[in-house]
Image (cartoon, rainbow over the protein chains, first blue to last red):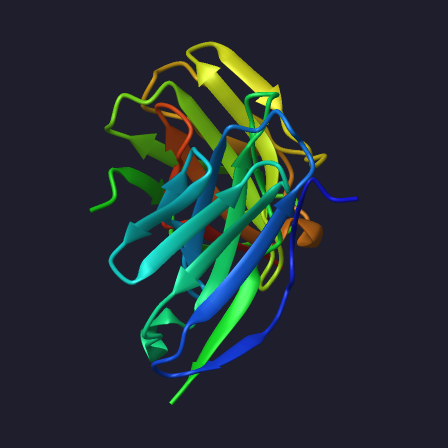
Length: 110
Length: 110
C-alpha cells in the first residue's frame, strides 16, 4: 500500500462544474496536508495547506480533511480550463518528511 | 515570484560527462531537497539536506551526489552521465513543511 494514494485520472469535468479530487494516506501520525498543482512541463506549485479537521476555503478552492478516515480532498468550484493540470496530494509524515502522491490529472472541458 | 533558482533550465550532454545541476534559494531555508520526475510520472526524492554540512539520500537510489556548504546553495553532481539519467530534476526548499520548488532542470543524456 502506498503511503499517499490518489486516483491517477484523468478526471474530466465540464467548465463551470465542481471538480473533486481525493487522497488517502496511511500514516495516522501525519499532521499537515498539502495540495500542489503541476502544469505539464512545469514544477509543482503549492495551492492549499490544511492542518485540522474540517474545511478550509481559499477562493474557488476548498480543502477538506478527515483525520479519522485518513482522507483529504480538494474541491474546485466553477472549474476553468486553466485548472487543467495534475494535482498532487502531499502529507507531512510523522517521520518529518513530505510524501507526495502520484497525482490526479484533471481536465476541464469547455 | 520564485526565490529558488535552478540552472541550467535545459541540458543535453553526452554519455560519460560530469555535470553539476545548480540550485540556490534566497529565503534562508534550512531544508532543501532534490526530486527526480519523469514526464507524467510521480516525484521521487533523491537527496535532502536539513542544514549546512548535512545531506541524506532519499527514497530513490541515485548515482548522483550533493553538497551543502552554504545554506543557500545545494548543487547536485553526476560524475558520469548515462542515458538512464535523462529526466527532470526539481529542487525545493522549505522553512517548515510546505515546499517551494524551483523551475527544474530537464536533463537529456545522449
